Image: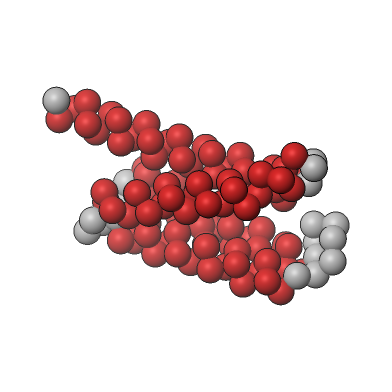
Length: 112
């Protein structure tokens, strides 16, 4: 597995785990089944994109980057309120976005 696909898979697993944490109310708030469904859905989608990157890496990485931007939009406000789950997802999303972006720029530079 390539490093970028592995990073996407780790992000997917993190999303599933934190979706379960939020869904069961282990993050300090009340239980939210929607958090479990959304976190699991994003996690499964990211794991699917990691698998798809074997045959079409460019498109899989672009879609993964788009999902990370959407996740930052969702978790930025809770992160600013100091909630650890929001901070974790915001930092992980930005880190994966930057990692994918740097990988893209390095691949373009190598072709030139």
